[in-house]
Amino acid sequence: YKFFTNNDLYMVERIEIDKKRLKDFYWRNGFVDFEMKSVSSELAPDNKSLIVTFFLDEGERFNFGNAGFDIKNIKVVGKDLQPLLQFR
Image (tube, rainbow, N blue to C red; front, side, top):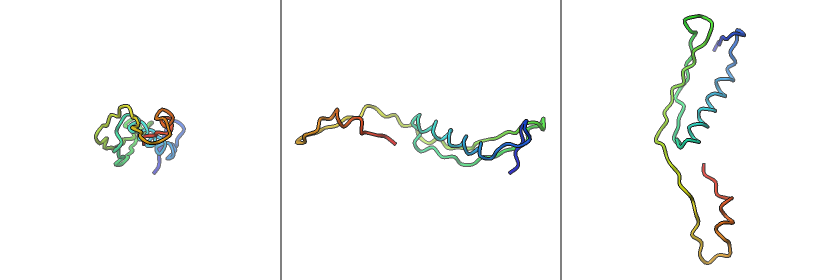
């Protein structure tokens, strides 16, 4: 790859950072099946900037409600477990 910007070089690492940011954004918004399909780049018609296009599949959006515990015959209070609950 060769990338150009005002400084003559566009760092390939920047695209990787943008890919991660897109993935994080979609995951935070309920698109847990999000998939980055590919990335393409081309020099803009003005020959001064780069056009980067991300091809992605959002997948289905999921909404998560409140989570709780149904605890019987145990010496732990449900509210004590709540901070330990994590969604991925």
